[in-house]
Image 1 (tube, rainbow, N blue to C red):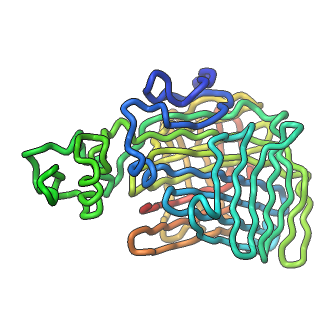
Image 2 (image 1 turned 30 degrees about the vertical axis):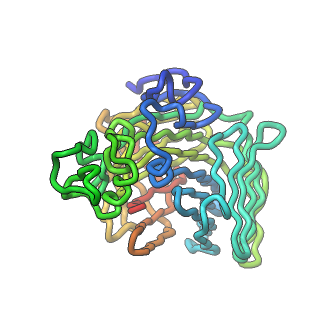
Image 3 (image 1 turned 60 degrees about the vertical axis):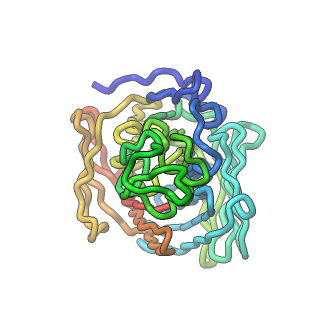
Length: 382
């Protein structure tokens, strides 16, 4: 039996500590500044990752839009997948300078104001009068004007919790502090020591703050923390244009993902999401464990246990089996097509594929047939 969620707290940090848990309801802001002890400005700048993602679709199309701030850079993407022709009619992405070309709002839903500006591109997701989110996309290949109705939404998920450090995450090596006089290697000037497994960049940054966990590499693992606010099916009004074709979106349903965390440098996840008014779910396997796994039945959210993704990573358009340890969800995902992107910048990299398709199987005793949605296989070194 699915477990009901507790009401959402007023803040993600209470009495200096993360308010770990899975909750139902909205939160005004995701703000890590009250953490005590508080990580240094430099560490937060390098590890605070934030994004707003909207996925919306109907029988004709699926549209995915994201605005991402990784602290030292920003990026955005927008695509339109034609479900009838099973092809991408638009696939746009662009990188930029954080703070100058993009902003990701700390407000997930009410009060949200996220934006991206680049050569030939303007994207925004803004909360407007009437409790609606206005999605605006204007690129050379895709235009979208859509309103997402928050007034009619089911209680959204709020998940707050610790994350897995992942390979290459300095804090996950169990370093509680840079110890003076002990350790594997001495920083220049003799002011602090860092373990031999820590990168040269971490050593250099540790020298800027060698007095314990407040530096870059000695942050306590408990302060690797993440929060996400996710909606289920939101009614949509609007339109999209690509390759000279205009698509009405008034029959579409949308889901919003607003995420904000102090994440490890190496972060990986697998994800599945599908929504309509009677049933919806969000599942993740990876850096956030089972903490954001939730099922909406007739608008009521409930917790799901650990998710398992059985698929061939090198053949993402083959069928996927996705199921949960509690036996409440067991589905086969049949891809219709996918958007994929691989970036290699030397100091940073990402590998991403997001198939679009349908889910069929059983959820909490209900038969599910051809429920539209997406899966994702993603790894970032950021």
